[in-house]
Image (cartoon, rainbow, N blue to C red; front, side, top):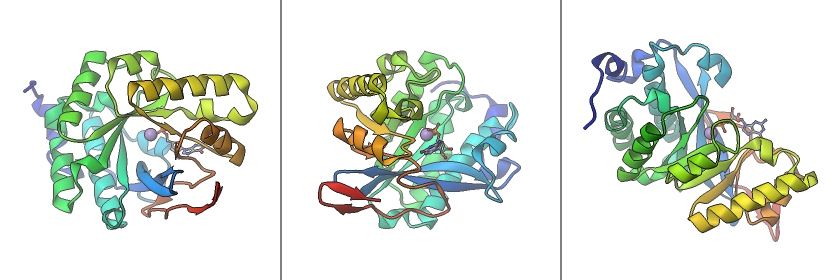
Amino acid sequence: MDSVSPRKCSGCKNGAAFPHVLRTAFQPIYDLRDGSVFAYEALVRGEHGQGAAEVLGWVDDENLYAFDQACRVEAIRQAVAAGLLDTKARLSINFMPNAVYSPMACIQLTLKTAREVGLAEDRLIFELTENERVDTAHVREIVAAYRSLGFATAIDDFGAGYAGLNLLANLQTDLVKIDMELVRGIDSSEPRRQIVYAIVRLCAEMGRQIIAEGIETPGELEALQAMGVHLVQGYYLARPALGSLAPALSMQPARLAV
Ligand code: G
Ligand code: MN
């Protein structure tokens, strides 16, 4: 096992080490083939529903590790409290690679929490969020460790920032989430359609599942559906809801009723 820093680990011994109450909002990722919820993405919120940007403002170098742990634990506990086990949906948790010091050590509290509440490993997805450049070897190690434990992994915001083609080349994630900037206005943008369709085909060839995120209009949804994208997320379908899990979509023949 890799070496572990006692200081960094001290924040992970229990989820209460982060000095703020964290809540979780859940936004569904739907499967258009049957309207079911494929997964709920867990999004961190403050005690009074403050947004992720405000909550992230409370995070510093000292409490980053404790924050990441607390987010995971709260996401799992709150999803189960909201009824996740009564559904077939998975739970998708964002993580910052820089908040993972040692992949196997840092996942233990998450694993313990999931086992305590009866959530099987194969119902957890970890979305790799890259808001800063990270060491490729480090991220590969995390993805490999999570896979070996039975979790699914996703590249988040693919096509934006640091989440480019190199990530696809270097990381064997199960899922790829297409960034919302590529989705925005896709129905009226030939270049966006060409790029996204190329990503769809590429991911199909690579055996990765695609999720389109940030869908805000029926036109965007239809354009993506026409390309064969069936895992979809966005405000047009459902906004994040604090502490509650949105129901499945009601489907009409050949068209969605949303
Ligand atoms: O980086 P990541 O993809 O995890 O970001 C998720 C964020 O995107 C959340 O804060 C969520 O509220 C937001 N979000 C989800 N769906 C939409 C959408 O349709 N439009 C916009 N603008 N933001 C969205
Ligand atoms: Mn995400």
